[in-house]
Length: 129
Image (cartoon, rainbow, N blue to C red; front, side):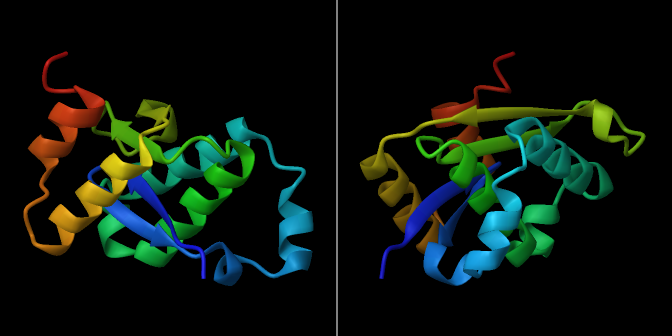
């Protein structure tokens, strides 16, 4: 069984494509653009900046949609730049990370050693901005 690792903000999610969508669902989503999928993520994180932690299945579906449109991308950050809970205040960033690095981050997470600052320093570099 193929498992993909996808970094969403500061957690690594394991995604099993075989269980994410039925073939008919996949056909329906083929027509979606990456801009539309990014908008879904922005709305999700505008509602709650901790959406990836509070609803991991919804987060996995978002990651899977991103991966379907951009197969090389395995990391996404949705960063709320405002405080009014509006989707237009959420910035989206996508990256392609080395699979070995993803596996190492996942192992750190399993051990409880992965936190926001480690992920930010290694991937997003937000604190430096």
